[in-house]
Length: 278
Image (cartoon, rainbow, N blue to C red; front, side, top):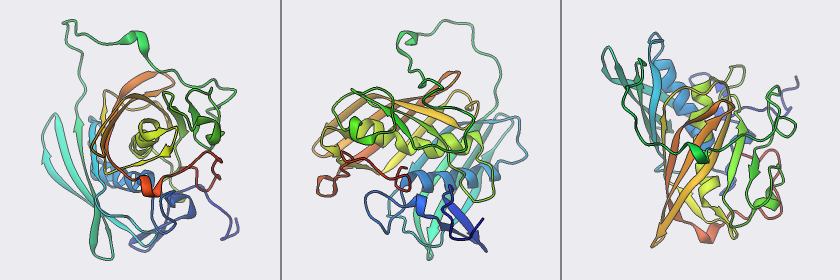
């Protein structure tokens, strides 16, 4: 493949650093990375730090996005905070030019069997994936697909409305030449919670400052869905929650806390290019 050919990955290795690729460019600013790429790199780092503990599964994941991550060389490092028979807690940071721009933590837990007592849940209103003819599972990548007041499609312009949003992603590899794992997939796609909860009739007018992901199991693969559960906003601060699901059903929740960013509204009424689709 020609070196200049567009590649579907967030980063390319460059020695000890990771160089963000064109797909990692944010819709907010051309010199800034979006949270999907940053979160994916953090998740990759955390998962590698948990190598050797195949008896545990990722159950909680939190990211703080407190500085703009630029389109420049990036590093990621992890530290084990606590390890026990049933729990592993790991912290990670992403740095650029010696400055920490994002941090994350993950809790890996040991599966067992469900408790016997009945606990309330809401099974009547679970999200469902788009049909396979619209979103096939046997492809390497497709533009994220959305539903809202309009049915499932990759036409972003149709979905700039005040309806309840859902999205379906086939996750992009974090690093060129590496397979995306199910945890990397769901951790990176979780940043799109902002898209399903903050995207309305006026465009995307809130920018998320964090990501919270809670999982009851790993995804079955790298095809991940999110559907808005709620959106609350007061005095320019918004909280959006989404249900996370795959082809086998719902697996958890994702929440983002956001700030109003109306002066830099992301207007998707005219659609979006493949390169800017994340």
